[in-house]
Length: 437
Image 1 (tube, rainbow, N blue to C red):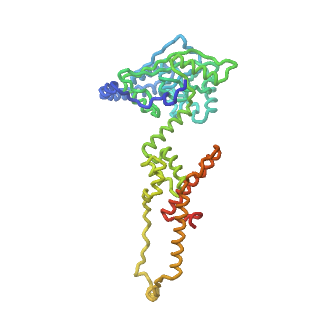
Image 2 (tube, rainbow, N blue to C red):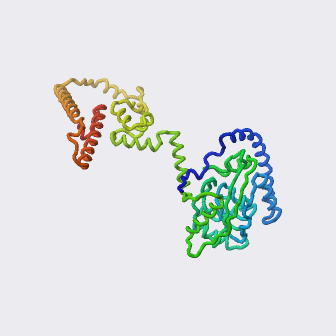
Image 3 (cartoon, helix red, strand yellow):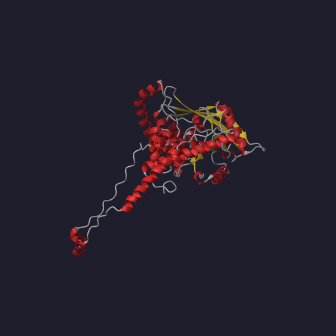
């Protein structure tokens, strides 16, 4: 089953239909809950930062903190849970998946933010050099896992978030080759059916997702354990990733796809280009492609002028006709700086006397000028006659073979382009080498 990449993500955070009406009714109460949760969370956050690490009191404070934020975690298939695994692999839906897993299963995840050490530990982040490259990340992760006192490492093989409703992205092999075995689990994120605000949307920041988490009544994270999976001896890392992806999708009743993080990045770039083209039609790829076709016929016209006319016509032939018939207004020239005036008081008397004494020569018409104008009129009439004769592009006979017909087509096409250029040059009185000079 081929799944389009746009089906893997959610573009709108708010629901439609009757749920939108209930959301509007809940908004005043949601704002009050957001403010209360914000102040209580800040106090609990500071308390957890002060308390010693790896203590029962600090764990209880963190659980209360996440509960106040509306983050509720439920476990399924606990019999498949194996606490001896050093690596945990799950799908990725929101920026807070690792917090939900850490509530029921102590773990850390590689940090993609430049945070202080205390804050990273509080948010269950571990600096493994994600921004320094894949090889450094892999080396730091292996070094971290070599210490048995460190908590397990939570990784998201997908590499990016999805909606978690239709299919999983392709699992990366690097996240599954750090250790021989992986505790595989699937994550589902749900909110109240009456207020189905999306937990995360395409292109949203973690701050926006956090604000809507505090705004919503409750956010339920369901963690379903698939079990411990080990890589076989004859199995490559890519094949192991495919097997883990299939097992996770089967447990969550989802499909699998071959879309990667690079595909998601390209999809977001395409959406950005489409949004820019919608705000400025001249940036549309379709307009640019048609403008290039017009410029092949009229190479003396700039692309900007062609695009401005194509925005209105949306037709290549009509734009060519507009330029040939002179229906496209000339661009307004930029104002030139005014010439500097000479102060009469600064002009020397000698130069003034010279200007006043020099006679003004008035050009008189000569016989040679009249002869030249007569010759030019004769050449212009000859060119018009030659143009009228060569404007006919009809084929003299129908080709008997496909090659003859194709040759005739290319000849007539070249003649049409030549006629269009000649009409444009004569219309605007241009001087072009090879045509009229």
